[in-house]
Image (cartoon, rainbow, N blue to C red; front, top):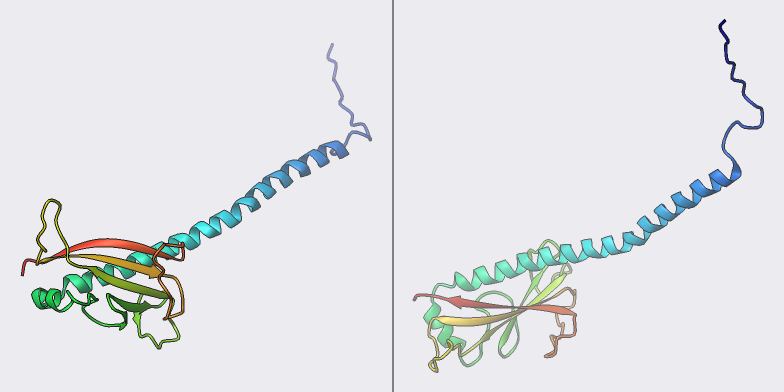
Length: 175
């Protein structure tokens, strides 16, 4: 004999209970709040990465200008009393030179309204090799400080206060 089992639906058991809905909403809320908590950190990291990319571009341009200076001997001799950057920009004082850049990393003038970065370049002369006391005629050590500011008169204080980044580079020429 065949018996058929018949399933019937009870009228009170359809859908989710209030406890199940509340638990699902709590889990979803926890996930959303966690993701929103990470958002400011991600934005800050993105901002820092962008600034680092522009700093790298500016640094490459400055080093390329120094390395491509034609008359290295005359350049080194003329800046031995008042070291400075070989080309472009306006002097910011004895021993340094300033260049200005926009947010694309393109060089602009000191009077440009698009200044976003100010770079100060210093030659550290004389430059000695370890164990040698004579000035190396074809060697120069650069200190390049880059600040993210629109103020062309930005003051680069001696102690680093986190407002700018300094890079050091050794440049050598054969003649």
